[in-house]
Amino acid sequence: MKKILSVLLVISQLSLFAQKNYPKDYFGKPLAVPIILSGTFGELRNNHFHAGLDIKTQQRDGLDVLATADGFVSRIRVALWGYGNVIYVNHPNGYTTVYAHLSKFNDTISKYVRKIQYEKESFETGNIFLKAGEIPVKKGDIIALSGSTGGYVPPHLHYEIRDTKSENIINPLFFGLEITDTKSPSINAIISYPIDETSRINNSNSKSILAITKVDENNYKTSTVAAYGKIGFGIGVYDQFNDGYNKNGIFSLEMTVNGSRVYYHDLETFTFAESKYINLLIDYPYYQDFDKRFQKTYKVEGNKLTIYQDLIDKGIIEVKNGLNYSVKIIAKDYAGNTATLTIPVSGKESNAIFSKPKDSTNYKIDRKKFNKFTKENVTIAFPKNTFYEDFYMDFKIKDKVASIHKPTLPLDKNFTLIFNVSSYSADERKQLYIANINNKRYPRYQNTRKRDTIFYTTTKTLGEYTLKTDNKPPKIYVLDFGNEQWITNYTTITVKIDDEDSGIKDYRATINDEWILMEYNLKKKQLTYNFSDKKLVGNKHIFKLVVSDNVDNTNFIERTFYRKP
Image (cartoon, rainbow, N blue to C red; front, top):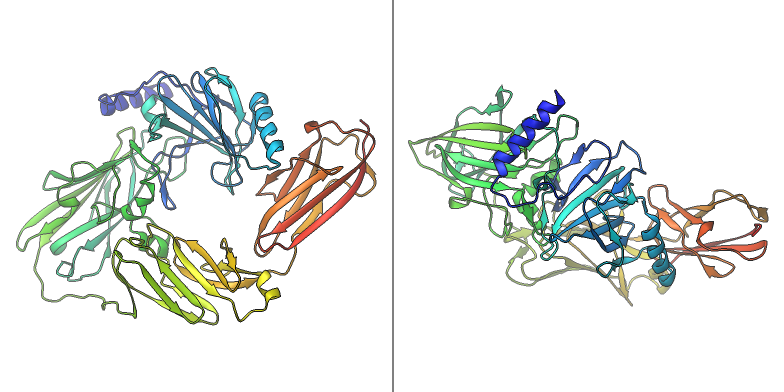
C-alpha cells in the first residue's frame, strides 16, 4: 500500500511540476530514517516564511545528518539563537544545502570550529566562511548529528536548498524528496473584508468571520453573502501529511470569480529580504489579537512579495448591485491534493451600514514622513516608511509605563524608543534597563544603550515598555564536583547559570587562568567543558567562571580540583 501511495505521489508531483527545471535525482536524503515533516517550506511563521523543511528526528538528538550531494563546506556558524549550529554545503550544480539546529559537527568540522572558538575565546563564532575544497564532502557523508540548538526548539533537522549565486531559497520538494501525502488541506475559517468606506458586507463596513459548512472531504461552502463595492477575503487553512499530525503550511492558494482566476500565489521560492512582507499577506491585527493566521486572497499596498501570479485587480472583487458571483478559493499542497471553498455573493446595495467609529488621536502617523513624539520622559521616533499605512497612534504614559499603540500593526523598520532617566541617580541608572512588558508575566529585556541620562533602544514591536531595575547578580551552580575534589574520571565540567531579570549577557571560564570553551545549552541553562579539548599539566588545577547579566551585575565562582594527567 505504501508503495502505491509513493507512486501516486511521484506521478502527481511530475504532472504538477514537469515544467520546473530542477534536478530530481541529484540530492539524496539528509537523514537515513524515513522523512516525516513537522514543517513545510513557506509555512507561515512569526514575521517570516519558513525557509526550509523541518524533518522529524524521532523526538531525539543525535541522528546522523548526511550530505545530500558531493560538494564542500562553504559556511559554518555556532549561535545560541536562530539556526544554532549550522552547516552550509556548496555543490557543483549551483545549489547550496543547509543543515541547521545540529547538536554536533563531525570530527573534521568540530576540530576546525574549535580552533576558531579558542582563537576568538568565544562559544559563538559568527559566520565562518571556508574556501572551496577546504573541507570537501561526498554524498552520504556524515557531516553532523541532529539536535535542537538555536533557542527553545524541539529536536529536528531544518533542511534548505538555495541558489548559490542569488541565495534565493527554493522548496526542497522540487528536487525529488518524496513525502507520502494523500491528504487534502483543511479549511477551517474564512473572513470577509470591506476594502474601503463605501464597501459593505452583510450590511456592515467591518470585517467579519463567515460560517463554513463542510460539504465533503475536499469541499466547503458558506451561505450567500450580501455585498456591495470592493471586497476581499482571507482564509484559515492548514495541511497534514499521512505520517504526521502537525498542522503545516499549504503550497498554493488560488481564487476564482465566476470561473476566472483573479488571485494566485505559491511557495516555490522567495528571498530572505521579502520574507518580512508575510505580515501583509496575513491579517496581522487578527493574528496578534487571537493567535490565528488568515491568508488574504488579495494584495495590499506595500506588499512586495514575489510569490504572486495572475492577479486581477490585486485579487480585490468589485461587487455590483443586482449581480451574483460564485467565488471559489482553492488551497493545494505540494502533492496536488486540493480543498475548495465556495462563497456565493449577491450584489446588494444597502443604506444601512454598521461601521466602527473613526480613529482620532493627537499622534497622527504620516507614513511617508519622519514622525517624532514626546510625552513626559518618553520619546518615540519613527523613520520614513516605518509603517505601511497612515493612522492615528495611541501614545500614553501611566504608572511609568509607556503604551505605544497596540502591537497589532506590522512595521517595516525599527523605531527608536527613548527614556530620559535624569530623575534617577547615577548608581540607580547602572541597574536600569528598558523592558517590553506586552507579556506582563515575562518582561523581555530590550537591548538598552546608555548615554548619561538618555537610555534608548530600537525595536519593531509596538506595545508597552517600562524601565526595570536589576540589582541581582546571575546565579551559578557547579553541578558535578565540589571544591578540592579529585575528578580524574570526569570527562566534563557542568555548570548551571541563570539570571531572573535582565538575562545573561556574557560568561568567561578559565582553568589555570587559560580560557576554556564551555558550550552553552540555553534550554538546560548549562555550560559544559570537555576535558578532551586540551591536556592539563600536573594534578592541581583552578577552575574559574565569571558571569555577567545585561546591566553588568557579575558573579563568579572558583574551584580547586585535582586530576591525574
